[in-house]
Length: 117
Length: 110
Image (tube, helix red, strand yellow):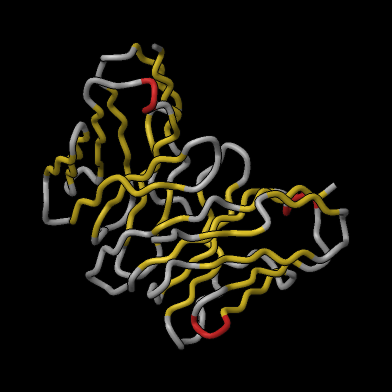
């Protein structure tokens, strides 16, 4: 079946502009995650959605970042008034579910490479 | 915050040799997972080992976990050029979050 898809694959934007990044998780996956990866670095957790529960936004770096998930499926990550330090690859992942003891693997999309000039 | 720390940061080996990568972490975990990333894009899940397991195999991959030392190792046997990638360990510590290390960049020379 189809994997996690993300769009656009690349985005170049001017400093100060707003951008929207989209993630289509695997059908049936209730958990959805957004990560950010700067050049040569590991993944930085941004936000987590699980079903209809309130999202965990604890990883969002500033109030310029927001995300929503409509209908428990597609998610959009929005960055307002982009800054050069926002340049990174933004990765989305989904999993069947999460739980304290569960180890359900995360399936990653190909990412969106954001460049802020 | 950084939980897993991979070692070495970069590794270069000849095709056919074995590659060993290590991961250390700081707090108690439920499980530890290894992922591979090609060309800075999406990660692919390789293997998961639970905190009550000590060793796990999957094809040419062997993962060990030592909870007393808070460390794990990933062994790739009989490496191939196609194994060239960055490898990340990720720990899960009682919540849904996975905390990733910075990765080991493996280069397999044909």
